[in-house]
Length: 241
Ligand code: IPE
Ligand code: IPE
Ligand code: MG
Image 1 (cartoon, helix red, strand yellow):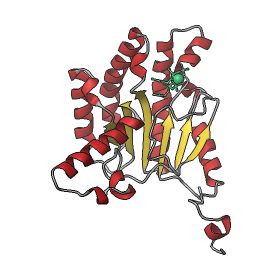
Image 2 (cartoon, protein in one colour):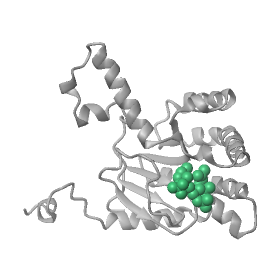
Image 3 (cartoon, helix red, strand yellow):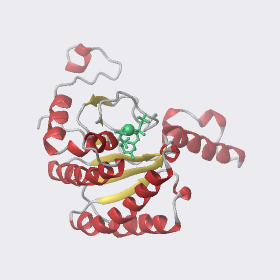
Image 4 (cartoon, helix red, strand yellow):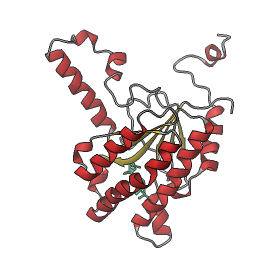
């Protein structure tokens, strides 16, 4: 593929509607979504994409019915337990971004173990955004910078975009080149706000449980046709401006 994104970020949406269309409980959609996730992770590894960031649970998703939230938490625990071995064998390096303090001790332990087991892997960097919010990420960075300033380790003048970005989640990775949202909605829903500043956006009606390597390749093909200008003119980007 001519132009492969280094970093892909996905809002995995539409699990609930997938289930409702089959007259199943919404939770069945989340279970089906795990299979799609596995397929997409494997495809990204196979294609040589460097980083994949998946939105699994937003800071706003706590407001869903208690049973659904509880089931999602159980699903995170069981999926982690079931998948870590295979991810590790595929050299995937797993990281979670988001506020983990709200999770149960059991889930936190599971997350820490998964990160530790895969920490030295040099394949796909798989980031799971769980209890993540883009505004939380930015506010968190601002708080840490304020602490530095208060301690006299940084001056207010030093707070400019590049320094600021170093305090955000995923600061060690290139910003996402391609953003995908399944499920038909065309919004960011408090996912990576800062990091998506120049990301190419791609939306599909396909519901997450129906998404797989074929749909991923469709998005990658669309990405390859985009001209990323970063504020320049098209001529400048083509090198004859
Ligand atoms: C995305 O699917 C999964 C999570 C938010 C955890 P949804 O559950 O939002 O599915 P729809 O949007 O209701 O169909
Ligand atoms: C975004 O989906 C969060 C995840 C996919 C985890 P939502 O379904 O929660 O987003 P809204 O509420 O439709 O904006
Ligand atoms: Mg949704």
